Amino acid sequence: MIEVTSRDNPLLKSIRRLVQDANAYRKQGHIWLEGDHLCRAALERGVQPLQVVLTPGVWSSDPVAWREWSDKVVVVSDALFATLSGLESPAQMGFLLDYTPALSLDSQAATVILDRVQDAGNVGSILRSASAFGFKQVLALKGTAALWSAKVLRAGMGAHFGMHLVEGASLEQVAQLSVPVITTSSHQGPFLHELLFHGRLPTACAWAFGHEGQGVSSELMAMAQSQVRIAQPGGEESLNVASAAAICLQASSMAALSPKA
Image (cartoon, rainbow, N blue to C red; front, top):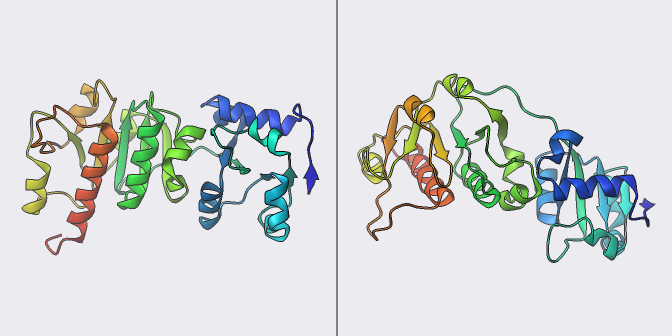
């Protein structure tokens, strides 16, 4: 265990950059996880932390366990840990992880395509839904919020560690997918619930979700094999992209479980 007392310690300065700059992990090659839930989610997926950072109270609660997680354990005061936190109530523990970008893709995998989805909360929520409903690959096209930023990690609640995430993906990579690409539309295409009821929803596909205001680009829309609508009997014009994604991905998981599949 190493106790750090200086705010200007190089490790702590590096972590602050990861918290403050959504793209810093790409430059540094490191990811910062804050909080017990995210850290344990990483451990459960076999992720080995480079550094464990704890407050004295957390360290003293189980020093044997912390040493088992990493041979590099740093203890900082509560006040110093607060300077590393992006939360109103700092979580008092965090992991520094190695980051290696994924370049290749699985052409046959059930996939989520994110087309310039910019809100970190929406992106994290979609990743969480994708993981819950069996979609293990995500292609994030250029312009999408940084998948491994602190805000997206918090919203994803650990979903990242069970998925294959490709950032900065291109339409050429989308074209490599052998599963059908499906997009949503507010005004054309069959209704999602009807496709599900009649057994016509593909059990393996790539759902494409677009920019919060502009939707899916015309270029990606042209690559889609089909468009579907989500029934909204309440009369709203559109749904939040994360809500729409959850509905579509859950429908696909139901299609896969259906005896008709």
